[in-house]
Image 1 (cartoon, helix red, strand yellow):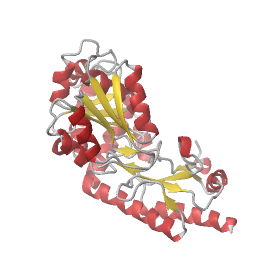
Image 2 (tube, rainbow, N blue to C red):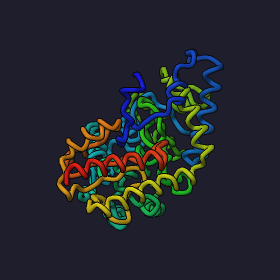
Image 3 (spheres, rainbow, N blue to C red):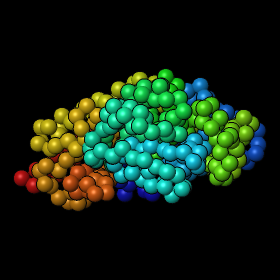
Length: 363
C-alpha cells in the first residue's frame, strides 16, 4: 500500500508494524524440513524463552491465540474434571465458551466489565471445589484491565493439582510477566499486539506439569496436541506447516525487543499509559478500568463527555490514524487508546494532539 494512504494503527490489535519487520517477511522462502528452518526455529526458541522469562519450551503455532486457548484446555483438563474461568470482559468470557464448546465442565467467577479479580475469590473457589485448571486473562483487551496475576498465581501454590493457564495476548512484551517465577503453566499470546508483529502466529510457553497431564488425556485433538508439538520441538521443527514468513519477521523483532530490554519495554508502556491517563483527567474523561488495575498497553476511555466516537474516528482517520471505537457491549460508551508494541512517546503525542483537535471542533 502506498505510504500516502497508510493509516497508522492505534488499535489494540493489530498494531502498527515497523517497515523493517514487514520487509523481513519477504526473505526467500525455505522448506520447513530443512536445516535452514531448524536453525531459524532454534533461534526463535532461544529468544522466545527470554521474552517469556522461562526455561521451559515455547511452542510456535500457525494460528491466532484463540487456537492456543483450545490447545491449553485440551491438554490440561481431563474430561471428568472441571476448569475454572475468571471472566470480566469479552475475551475472558469467550475463553469460557471455548471450554464449553470442547465439552468441558466450566465454572466461572464473573466480575463486572472493568473490574479486576481479587485473589481471595480464587482462594474461596478452590476451597469449595477441585479444578484441573484455572484460566485467567492477564490483560483484558476489551476493558483495559490487568488482573493481579502474580497474586492469583500465589494462591495456586497450595493447589498443585490446578494448572494455571494464562492468556497474555495483549500483555506479553508490554506488561510485566514472569512465567517461571510466578509459576505459570501455560502462557499464550498472539503476534499482533504488544509483540508488534503481523497477525497469524501465536506462541505459548508450556510447563512440564502440563505435558505430564496431557499424557493422561486420551483425546487431546490433533492440531494443538502438545505432545506432538513437543516431539517436533525437540527436533527444532513443527508437526504441520509453519508460517515461515512470519517467523522471519519474529526473528528480527525479537532481536529488537531483547535489545531494548524487557524492563525498559515495560517502563515505556507504563510511561505511555500514564501520559494518556493525565490527558484524560485534564479533559474530564473517565476511566472504565478499576483503579490500580489499569493496563500498561491499552486504556479504555469512559466516554463521560458523550462525544460522537464514530465522528472522532473519522476525524482521526483524516489525520492518518486508525482509532478504536470500543468493543462489544461497551462500544461507544468507551473508546480504547492502544499504547503498545513499538509505539514511542513522540507518536503518542501526535495521537493526543489529534484527539485534542477533535475535541476543539466539539466545543
